[in-house]
Length: 184
Ligand code: HEM
Picture (tube, helix red, strand yellow):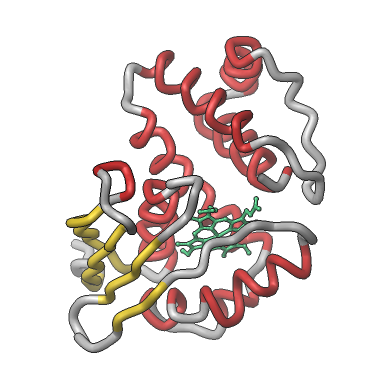
């Protein structure tokens, strides 16, 4: 896992819960927290931090990972505005993941191990994204998708009828987008 992921987690935790919380999570995970963005670190470090946050907040690990995805997205949008500026809504943005965003990430962070999604765009109402990865970070994908919808002023509902965590061979994400309701 690239250091940028740990940098994003640190920034999200400090932004929402403060510096001390990050220090406590590092202590509980027995990690020093020194991550350079292009360095590579064991996936297990992320799992340890997630476990520690899960215990501290009394939340299932997947809920922590999803929260991380939601929180990381606006940080990515600030860091890499060009991926977002070209689009008016979430669906076309997501459709550039395999062809533009993650390939670009591989160039920026050599050795990055990014997932390749399978898309089914046959329905105009539901975008299907099939996810396979040994990391089984489908909750991260869900959070990033939800965060991306917020970024484009939409909301997303995500069905997850097949999941790597439930013994299926892939995760199937069925995503519906809704415009933000008019504000009073
Ligand atoms: C909302 C759209 C996105 C989704 C659904 C998504 C999904 C994911 C997932 C699930 C992973 C975990 C790796 C794995 O599963 O094996 C990942 C890794 C990563 N993604 Fe994305 N991503 C999105 C957008 C972005 C954007 C906009 C960026 C930054 C420009 C980005 C940069 C990265 C990086 C740096 C990694 C870590 C790779 C590594 O540590 O080896 N992603 N992405």
